[in-house]
Image (cartoon, rainbow, N blue to C red; front, side, top):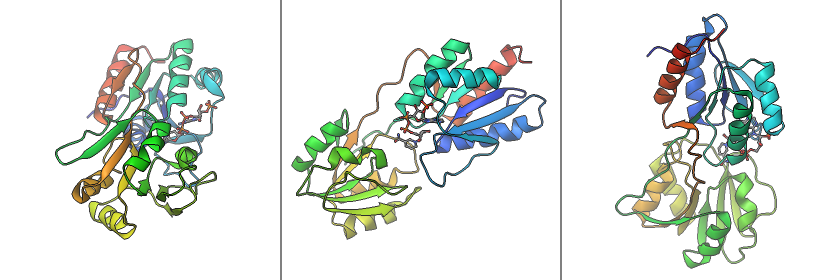
Length: 261
Ligand code: NAP
């Protein structure tokens, strides 16, 4: 596949898709005069997996700061490849790109779909998940991320196996085991974990993707219910693709159709 040449691209990252796209673009654009690929990370993870190309770390200071940065760096286009639950940076990108008239593409992996044998309970948010939990099980595997744990902290009488990439901070549920790990995970590994801790319900966000889907297969095999926290709907006013390949096509079309200096 031809990668577009000469574009100055900002990738809002923090996902495997963002890393993959940066890798492909950095190779294609490195030799192209004027081309540049910068991946931006929030700085939440202590030891992030760094993408190819340039990296910048830390918030921009809201949409105004992002717009200022886009202008100063003379960025041609932004790809928002952030996690589907990273809603603030996505909203910021929408506003900033509109303000400085920079084309924006959202690269958003599809959500997971339940199949035969799955016992999924979809909920709108973390608070609803917490309210529903006592009716579904007593021993919970919680994989909703470090920033979500306060929503479950008040649930006395339930055991929690909490898996996060970086250490979790209080408030936390009282009866808990903290597990630091980072995908990709295997079905065998997830089955072993669920069995070892005698888990009877799994709580996850609908992150989508393959890296962390093994827990869903394992839960199905063990007949466990899954509380699935839904995503917010994606904005309809912005170009959105689901794969790296589609993002590359979009960028190639942009490059072909635009008079980039
Ligand atoms: P968020 O709530 O949407 O963003 C909060 C603030 O963090 C933003 O307003 C922005 O600060 C800064 N920020 C977020 N992503 C950034 C990026 N890629 N580059 C520069 N600044 C960024 O985001 P979040 O849910 O905390 O997620 C943070 C990062 O972790 C994202 O990059 C996301 O892709 C990744 N991630 C998130 C999840 C999740 O479940 N939420 C899971 C895996 C990975 P300013 O307003 O100052 O610009």
